[in-house]
Amino acid sequence: MKISKIQTQVKQIELKTPFKTALRETSHVEFVRVHVEDENGYVGIGEAPATKAITGEDIEIILNSIESVREQFLELTCKETLEILHSTCSIGSSAKAALDMAFISLHVKQKNRSLAEYFCIENFTPIKTDVTISLNSADVMLEDAKKAYAADMSILKVKVGSDVLHAVDIVRKITKELLHVQILVDANQAWSFEDSHFFINNMFDAKIELIEQPVVASDLESLKKITEFSHIPILADEAVFTLADVKKVMESKSADMINIKLMKCGGVTKALEILEYAREKNITCMLGSMLEGPYSINIALYLAFAYRDIIKYVDLDSPLLYKEPSSELDFLFKGCEISLKK
Ligand SMILES: [Mg+2]
Image 1: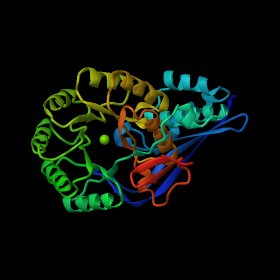
Image 2: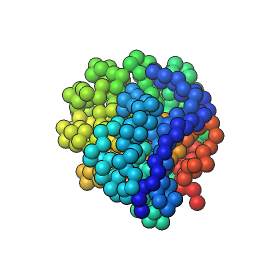
Image 3: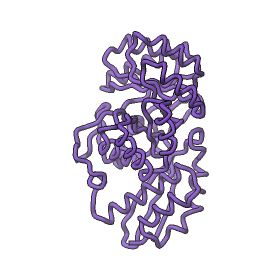
Image 4: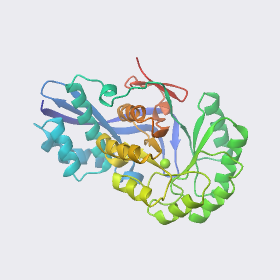
């Protein structure tokens, strides 16, 4: 069955409260949605949010990238489009991810199968996502952490910034007040080697699961030294986009774990390659996302269920931030627990 139509639209979903980072404040999730249709009327949907600081793509760039390759996919099968997309298309990783998931979803529909069947999911026991505690003053962050815990969210991803004293302060406060939460610390490349050293040395009596991307992505040498020194596992995020990056980081022992995101690697096809490699090498993974729409979260969640043996951490909390629950989700969120809708 050949592809007859590829259309894009820009969608927004309102958030409960504005999402704040050091770079921006936003009240909506904004993303490009791609509809791919075949000659029999079957439709596959993919999505990509703008995360210029990470992938270099804003909404305009994603739209233009998809437009620039659209024509060459018409009249082809899903299998043919996926081959071309990942061999000759030089577009950004988010635009690629949106097209990849649309083609795969369409392929699954054409075969009259569900995505759960396609990914060979056998175990439907609910999984748990972390929930993000945004960077703010220590008091506000502690309040947010308490609120999250009271709402049954027991895995907290605490965002910290370049002020390492603040980072030590807030993490110590949360671990002291909330004894039963799992704490993941994400520095988003904000620290120097010395900052990382300082933070880790101040955490011997605080229980933390992991530290995510302490130093800039390009500084693998420091990342490796921190990993060697740290009693807390180190997780590489911005340092690993592709399978080649993952191999480089793991073979050089520059990190203990990796964070896989569809928007970084270029979609499901590429995420599967990384996950298969991780399974073979027994590498612990986090499956993460940007602030994303329901269809890209859906497909990431199918992967999290299918690879639960190596995905120890799930960072897919975007739907928890939506103002209204999305009817387009295939999954139910209850606190941090996620199960497939019946
Ligand atoms: Mg991260």
